[in-house]
Image: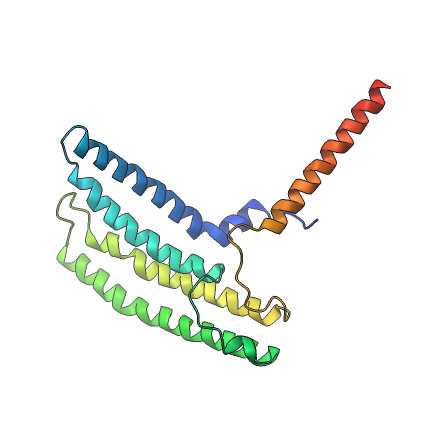
Length: 199
């Protein structure tokens, strides 16, 4: 059985997913409150929609970075899978490099937008949340995406032919099955030990 990944490493490799999950849970609660208040109490909390809009944008861009880690971005790979192994590796690396260049490029106009909002002290209409705070997540997420792309390029240089470019499953069923088998084995050993002690 493979050695279990330390918690801190697992967290660093997937923290955008954890944050996006927390944001999604928060959005669900806010929208639930909005629906109940509107249809049961006939009163609308308009501020819940404003916060949900901001959180939705944050969740989407965290998802962009997470999709790189799990290789879940949509691709047309009909040509790539037909070429030899070495050429396929080169094409996948070039693909990541182009995405990396785009991610770095988009940071600058987004930071200009954030700075413009900050200079004008622009705020949301209801809660007066600074728009700079709402939008700063976008360049930060593209920076994180660039980091994840570097990690993916490093992975591509080390992967064997059968693993090359394969998307990482969201839930690793093989690992879960191995853990379950190990758990069953330990339970059987414990039962045998108890039986032996009783005899």
